Image 1 (cartoon, rainbow, N blue to C red):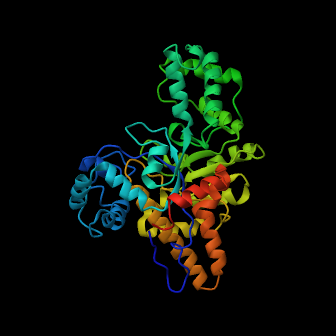
Image 2 (cartoon, rainbow, N blue to C red):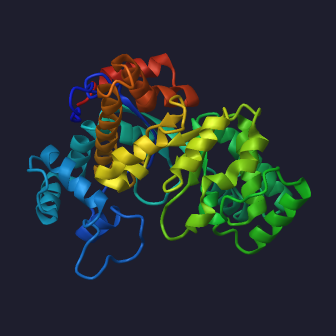
Image 3 (tube, rainbow, N blue to C red):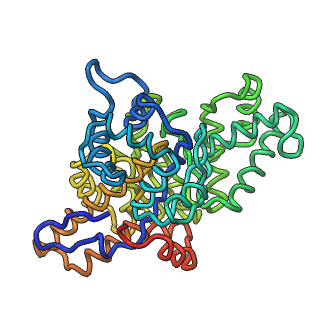
Length: 403
């Protein structure tokens, strides 16, 4: 998907490797109605303002800018016409066309959300890339507790807290065998101001007993959240951490990545990388943490999708302080293949405008700009998640550059 180059700056659509979308979600297998479609354009779970729709957002306008031409419609066509064309094509063809146009070669899919969503392999197959799983810790714990309550699951563990915590430890270890990373949404469940040290076994058992006795629903106990983080860190797999904005279920001031400073210090030297997701409007705080702690990385995903033409400014602000080997691309796309298109298009456009502008001004050389572009697009993620040369070769064969 070509991105315009500013002035005499370098073009990136011709030289970027296939993108590594290091944090995303599955897409709907069925055709959504108009209201459901629009609900995926916002982080809000409420109705839009009277007289408007969720298309009246930067994300909605970006969908209308980038997606209609892929479905044989003019850019900026009315939502009603776009949705009608979508229904004509059906969900499978729509998914194939849209994902196939993103230039994404690897999809690292968080499988922790409910719904009839495509998994890593199905998502990647539609886009012509490779799929990998990211395991959401809180979902894994809730499933383990549900299995324990039924008297089945891992080893037939019942609702005894010690048996549950043993089963949970085994579940994390088993997941680490195939998943490329773990993810925590502690920002939603408690906030990021968690005590950094792993909780003592007695405290974990006490918290587990109370949670199981209450029916083991949505996990919000800070002791168990800290325990999950500790289990994940011990595997050596990268740990993705939601920070910054999201739906109204979180308190934004409790999702500031600066609140993780003590945890960051406590995990230094463990061999586990921490990847701060989304970050906005605290992206400068995230960039600071990435600049001073070797095992901390930051992610520009979701932020660019929701800031539209201002994505260029936001990316430039990330790059003010974050080392160039520390920023990763993602779309955080969820539900709609359109969000993969928008995320990748806005990233390419912002990257070209920022790095191309710096090159045109003489601040950077074209060679350095191209090298940094490749780092952000794919190579940083490949290094963090251990995606090897064999996978890179498959993705280049299946996903030509800048389709």
